[in-house]
View 1 (spheres, rainbow, N blue to C red):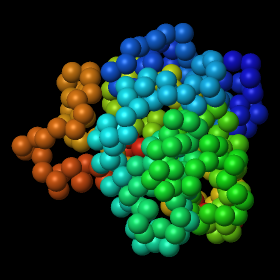
View 2 (cartoon, rainbow, N blue to C red):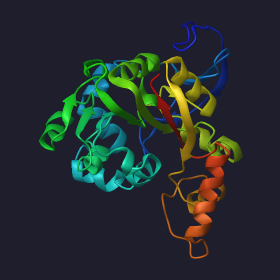
View 3 (spheres, rainbow, N blue to C red):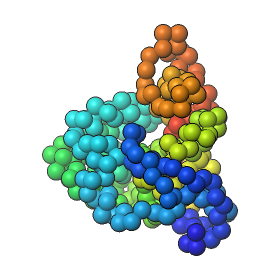
Length: 294
C-alpha cells in the first residue's frame, strides 16, 4: 500500500489479514482480493484496496439492498429498532430534551424517530438519496452530507455504525465538530475490532468480521485518537454489546453466528454481567464514546 495514512500521513503498513471477507451484510457471499493493513504509526486498520465508486454506491439504493437485503422502512425498523434502546440508555433522554440533535449516517432515521418528541429539532444527515423523502415526511430536517450542516448550530451530534464506512474519517469528524455549538456533545458508536470473538475465535471470525463495506477498523485507542485529532475532548469511553451469550457460544461451537436466542439457563442478570464485563475490558461488539467540542 503506497498511499499515506488518512489519519497520520505515515506510509508504512503491516499485514493484519489476507483472505476471504464478507461482501456485505450477514449472509452475503464472501469475496477475495482484499487485505487488512495496520498503519505502523497510529495503528489504525484499513481495508486495501478501497472498493471503486464509493460515493455513488452510498448515494444509491444498491448499498442498502446489498447490505441489508432491503430498502423498506418497516423491514429496516423491524431489524434495527432494538438497537435504539441501548443508545438511548447510554445518552439519557434527559440530555436530549429541548436540544437540536443531528444524526450523521442516519439511514431511514430510526434513532431520530425515537427522540423527536423530546428534542427541539432533529436533523438527518444521510447520503442515500432514497431516504430523503422518508426523512422529510417524518419531520426531520434533511442534509445529504455533513458539510451541508450549518456551523455552530447543533447542541448534540450522534453517529452510529457510520465512521467505519467513511473513506476520509477526519474530514467527516471535522465537519461534525464545526457544526456543533461550543461545548456541544458528540456521541459515536462503531464496531470494535477488539471484539471478544476476535480474541478467542480469531481464525473463523476474522473472515466474518472483515467486510467490503467497512473501510477502517477501530479499537478504543484508535477511535480515541481520531476523535481527539478532530479537536474533541473525550468525556467518557464505554461500549455496547449487541449480541447475547448464546451467540458467543454458537461461534465457539459452530463457527457461525446465530443471532439473538434464548437460553433457559441464562437469565438477565447473567447476560447483563457478561455484557458489562466485555464493556469494561473494551471487548464489546461496539465502542461508544462521548466527546465534547472545546
